[in-house]
Image 1 (spheres, rainbow over the protein chains, first blue to last red):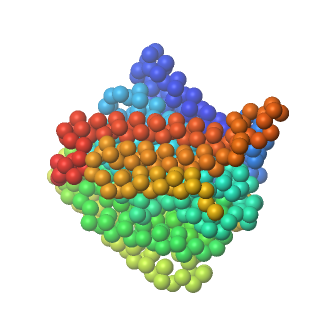
Image 2: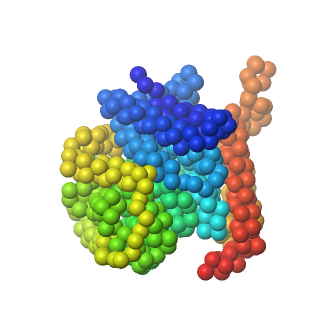
Image 3: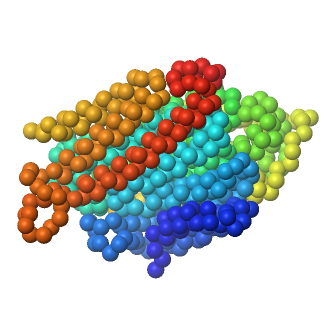
Length: 473
Length: 112
């Protein structure tokens, strides 16, 4: 029996061990961080395999639930934890590119970010969810302003303001639930939800939904995304899109399905998702800077996930979870590639990046990533979009499907333009990528192709969505 | 009937929210965020209030005591709020060092 609490404890322990290690050898910091994340990935895989058999309930401090704090890891939580830890591990290889001091703080904050996101995915206690949300947010604020330039501070400031408002709303929601039910355990809340006053219930749901919507990049709370992604260091951008956004969206799914047990169509969530998709994709189309385009595209993808959750049928939610997987892998790949391209072309303007993808070490993973995000069949991005559409189709929401497809066409248009620029012949010479750049790119590309060609293991996990919708872990 | 302390805390939250969305000065915005935090803490602590209750120490002499869990929650929330405020203020200092102003409009103008 392996305790899921290790996924939280190990990064926390090593984050505060790093200052001591840096006294001994400053050069070893990136390797120690990568090793810790590797260890965490192994534990996450073991926890996931265990959770596939039966949901794990890890009781903290010997206090029995509902009074004590409990970690609740179902198959989907384990799946998400595995995705987050794997992405963190691969991105930490790219983090070795970071040269700007203070590196010690950078690595401490990445480990704390990993700890917070893991906690958000694993916890079974709603106040604990708030605490981990704040750990994630505080680490993110620090990382977003790491460059200490105007762009970084501005992005971080927007993030702080919206993030604080979001966490205030989360806390209001928790206070309302506690005022009526006197419990903070998610399953206990779900069981006794009928005792709640219906109006208080709606207000509590709306507060929690809006609060986690900030982290999940939901419209209209996502104005921080482009600035923060633009101003943050490149590896951090990849972490935001593949780690904190994923934990935010999973918290949102927990709120919708586990706590409030809405197991059918939620028009409110679908409309928010649809607005998010449209806002993201259309604004992405007019962007000229590569990182901003990818940031808006990230918003669009998150909107698709929110839509899938809102449609609420088993197939659509399966699609949403598949989309989380594909977005975590694909966007991290694209942000790493974007980091290299900005470094090589020494500008963020896409028009200056002609021919940069003609180096196969960059070009092939980049193409795989873009095609996967677009939703092309042999890659993982296809299944997510396809299942969300199937879910909508089987319920007869044809207007929603039409709008969704229209947004997808916009997405294909701007990615196709990007491909055209990047692969056209050019006489410019770009510096060759170092192994710290192309190794993570190739690793992400392998995952995208492998699970695109052979998605059965993922579908095996997604079979548990039905139990999740029925209010399980 | 809604007790008056709920109204007070909701008013604090609303005031803070108004400051955050209406003011253009960074320091004022951060003060607004802090007010929102305080309002939620007040809401949480008042949820645990029991009329005539004492501190939640059970020794038999005081049969009525307030709910201890909201107090624990508020303690945590205060610590978190303080650290977020410290970080927000340090980001404001960073912006001031980069631009020489704490007015949002000025900062936006300087960026373009």
